[in-house]
Every structure is written in C-alpha cells, then in structure tokens.
Image (cartoon, rainbow, N blue to C red; front, side, top):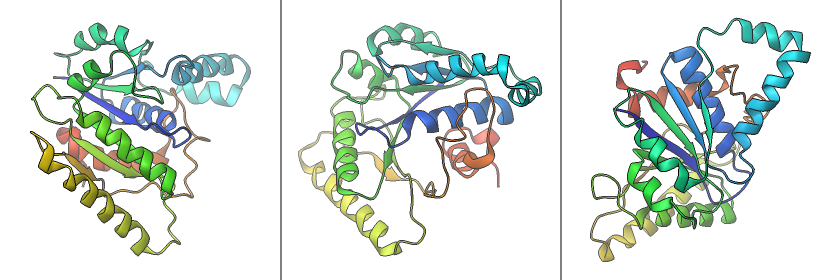
Amino acid sequence: MAKIISFCSQKGGVGKTSITAHVATYYSQIEHVPIAVFDCDFPQHSLSSIRASEIDRLKSDETFFKKAERLTNTPYPIYSETLVNSLPKLDAYENKNELVFVDLPGTLNVEGFPGIVKRLDAAILLLEADPISFESTMHTALAIANFANKNGGMVPTYLLWNKYNVHEKEERYSSLEQAAMNYLDSLNADRATPMNVKFMEYRIPQSVNIKDYRSTLIPHRTIEPLIKELNKLFVPNNATA
C-alpha cells in the first residue's frame, strides 16, 4: 500500500517545497524507495520548476551532469496538478508499494482539500519559533482536523521544527511545544474524534541551508537525520539504528 505524506504550511517561506524535494530525492536515490511527487502548489508549481531548471542545467554544467550520471535510479515523476485534479491520480497509487509526497498550496481553502485529507497517511507541519509561524501552524492543524481521513479520524499530524536555533535556550522550544499541545488538547472536549498531533524528535537546525542544496535529481546528506525518523514512522523495513 502506498504511503501518502505531505509537508505543509499555510505560511510561505518555511521550506515545505525544499524539504519535500530533499526527502523525495534522498528516498529515491539513496534508500531506493519508489517515489512519486504531486506538485499541487498551484499556480507556481515550484517543484516542477526546479526539475525543469535542473534538466536545463544538465546541458550547461559539466559537474552537475557527472553527478547525475552516477544516479542509480531513474528520477521520480513529478505531477503538476491542482488539488482536485490530483485525486484520481493519487487513487491510482493506492495499491502500489510507494511513498507519495504531495506539495500542497500555501492556502488550504481550495477545492479538493477535503479529498486530499481523506487520502493522506500523514501531514508534517513545518514550524518556526516566531508568533506568526506558530499561529499559522496551529491554523493548519485545525484545518486538517476539520476533515476525516480514510479511517474516520484526524490524519496523523506531526509538527517539525525548521530553522531550529541551537543557541536558543531549550526552555523556549519546550514551552512553545507545551503551549501548542495544551491548546490542541483544549479543543478535544468539543470534538467527536481527538486531535492527533505530535512533535517530531528531530529539529532541522538553522545552520542547515535546506534551500541551497535542494534537488529533484541529486540527493544530499543534509537531510539524513530527518530520513532516519521518517523511516521509523513510515518505512519500518528501511529503519536505521
């Protein structure tokens, strides 16, 4: 059965497209997991634009071309679709043993979003330690919670710190995490099904420049710690110690 996962946020610039590219490419080329990506970030379709730019770069950058020559897997497909048009294509992957990543648009108030939620196995929300990002992430979690997944409950939702400042006092992050969980727990009294939200253990450090090394063709080890945790959650046969 396919696992359908989305890194998402309703706040621009938090890295959802870059992280999607990193994770999909790493899984495809290093973990050798079959991958498909749905670029539903209409109208810019950033992932598709990255792939097109990289294909052009192969013609002019010899070093990049030589790296691509060493790839062991064919590059994964990227489908540029609106949310609503992606639904039947996602269903075609239901019985395939693949990881499918969906890059959602910056606003979730679009046609097809309830259908996407019904198909997701997990939503990974990117969070930064500032009030705007924090509030946006809570709104995103609530938007997802408003629609049932394939099992009739809330899509398993994970909060992932991006641009984690290792020099910041740990108390700031732990207090923000506690505030988030307290807020979400307070909503359960009025819900038929409880909120299903957890923080991921790994935090992407501020020192890791995700955008600079993103690629839909060439994998980069900078994302490896995140892959290890994702393996434990979604790809148990590939889990590493």
